[in-house]
Image (cartoon, rainbow, N blue to C red; front, top):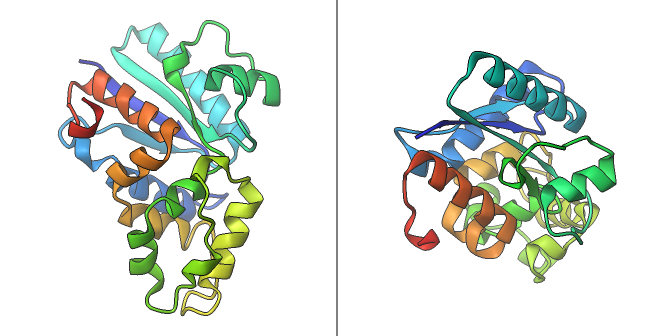
Length: 207
C-alpha cells in the first residue's frame, strides 16, 4: 500500500496557524491510525497547488510509492463531474495528467464540514450557541460567505465571541465525528474513500 500525503489549503501565514491546522487534520484522519496520511498545511490555495505540484515531481523523480492529494476549498458551487475539472475552469490550474482521485474539494469551504456536526459545535461553543442561526440546508449547497456568517452569528453570544477561521475552525475540526461529516458531505466521503483505498484500512460506513 502507498503512503498518502495531503496538501491542504488553509492555516494562514503564521507557523502557528499552519501547525494548528495540520494537527487538527491529523486528528480528523485518526481512523487511519498506523497508516495515517501525512498532512501538509500550505496557507493560501495557490501555495497548496504549487506545493502539490512540487511533491508530485519529487515523487516521480525519486520513484516513491506515495499517493499525493490536493485538498482546497471549492469557493463556489460545483457544477462539473470532478474536482479537477472545477479547479481547471475556476482557477485556471493546469491539472492535466493528474488523476481525478488525487484532487479533492472542501465544498464549498471547510466550514461546511464544521456545521455538519452540531455536537462538535455544542462542545466548542457551549450552551450559549445559537443553533437557530445555523442553516438547515445540505452543507455543500451553502455558499462560503453564508457558512462563515452563520457560524459567526451562532457563536456571537458565547465566550468565543463569534467564529475565527484558525482559532475556532481548527478546534472544531478536532472535535468532528468524521462519519457524521462523510454522511452530510459527499465530497468528504469521496476523499475518505480514496484514503481508505490507498491505505488498505476499511471504514464501516464506506463499505
